Image 1 (cartoon, rainbow, N blue to C red):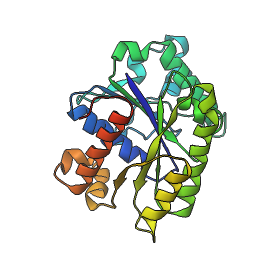
Image 2 (cartoon, helix red, strand yellow):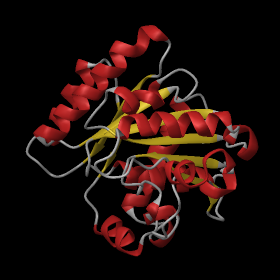
Image 3 (tube, rainbow, N blue to C red):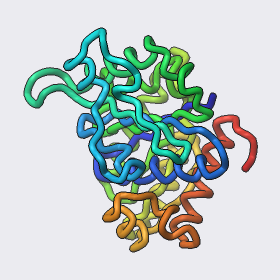
Length: 254
């Protein structure tokens, strides 16, 4: 089983990238489980037509020990299993602690053994890398972390913090840094700025995604761009990214 996490600043496009990576790997015949680790519970929106699904924390609150995996784990019919960790009631509780509870409950209930995914993708809010938000980096969860950023200053700042957290955790047997994903916003010297960030952490730019009207239209329709514009440049870039990540994580070359 290949397990990796995608981190990035809120709004940088990590969920769009994660959903399209899931779609690309599923089209290769792999069974993919995507787990959203963001209190907004919108990580898998493009994989389920934006249809709301109960989160793991919803299930814990509503059913306690009577919660079943089928209450919170949803297959989309295309070889992708969707899960949203969820968050606490607004104003009551810690979002990071909620992610810990959700992931621990999924593991205790044997979700990986029941659904037998070939690939597990954790999509994690990356503005904060303390407490529960670092949970997917821990031993037994993701083996690699990929950080998505643009060339914008705050995006690079957040990406640097995430990379530093991965570096600080590596002596504990946690996930290692797999690479940086460049999601272009067409800022000045963007490629050079992100290349310099990758060099600072002795890693590579795993893939690049250009600004795309096809991606915007796909998001409006709440589907992966691979589904509505499979021949587009965006679909090609995202497919190449998915295959490269899969290879870095130990999968066979696609």
